[in-house]
Image (cartoon, rainbow, N blue to C red; front, side):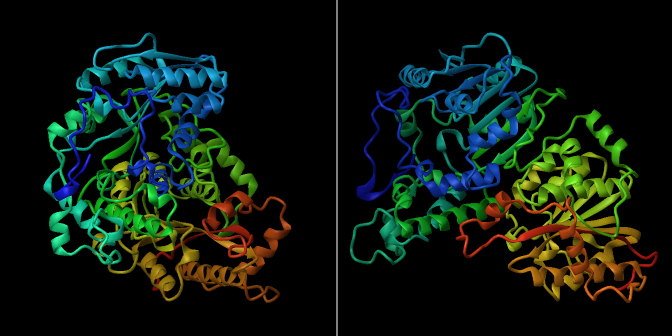
Length: 608
């Protein structure tokens, strides 16, 4: 809800018990939910990729292992127009689905759509979550935009927890913002500051021929966002935004958080009527400025000024160790489920002191298959070379450094491998600027919340960091970072490794290496530079065979091309990297993983 002053003050909404229970489906076209750019933003924040919808992420990451098991039961809260139950059925879910809603007209339309599609495993029920309960137990409960409408929210959440089977999951996409949208002044000021960065033509100002100008002080004084009154919210929907703050407090209290990812809405969701979201879908000019609004919101959240108001949760009963295994095809799932304690023990038994690696190697299909068997979440997290590199790094570190050791990751981005290493008993620090450089992420605050066991240092890794003063580590490692670091920064990075690596510690890195195609010469030369710095860390001069070429990386590439088991970036992975570029601008190339691990000298040498 939003308001405009002066002549653009909206008329009072007609009283409505439930605006979603009308004769026609509720339209989100004018809201941020209706803009393709905003949906891509939400997808990126939740699924890690703009083209992976949140429901696809939910299915792939959590529900796909149950698709062919007819004994599984799923409860949907807020069926609305039937989108979620249809999505599950279309993806092959065979178990019983109970889809509930308080809106009888919307529920009738959902029931009709499911029947027309021919699915017989869905039962629609009318239910008020303030008072009603459900029969039996469920493997999964899905709530999308419904819990913040519940006045008796604690009673409701306890009921839902009781209805979960051991190992069952509550998956919630919810609003955690202020009660009835009573925003604090700080948030109101930021909404207006972001809107004032827009050209006047994109705002509800009179057309006076100055549409490319930003609003003047007089313009902004007359037309700006005004916090909605409680009375106007109640007139629109008496249940709207009742329990956001309570959800934020109760969900971590009553459940164990498996995953929590915010996806914004802190500024954008209040701009209906102030910015033409619908037009952004067809007008590139409007879409460009919507990108600016999105970046402003991300910066306000990432810097800790305000928090995400819309959040995705995966929750389980406290103490329930069993979780559904991650599917082998979960190529877009960006974060691994934490293994149960017996899985930690199995990983330690398999790899601690038992995973020797040569000083220089390339990734192989054999190693990837081993990772898919024993570290499936990491091996299916991204769809590119990191699916090989992250688990190899975990295994190599388990083989080289006993649990309890101190590790530092350079440029960790989302710290998936670091989080698992922390769970396996290591003390892990990640140093990353989180500024988007090298195509890296910017979600520092979100990662800090989601990975509390990992220490995050928001800096470029270099000598003299105050945050790392006098600290030494048993191993310093990087995953798909060094290929992005040119000279002289590469030399400075290795100088910092020498500064912070314990005598006899391990320097371990895997990097993408274009072995054939556009950019291969640079990547091979970069490989040589990295291997030379690694050799310097050992304090032992390189022992080169006179018959060998001058390029160790070229020798490695030549051997890799002759080896049937070399792991190459797939066509799907190349397409993921291509992003919005045309194929001619980003043609296919062979890419391998170059991997190196050395032990530093007993007295650390100077590098650089």
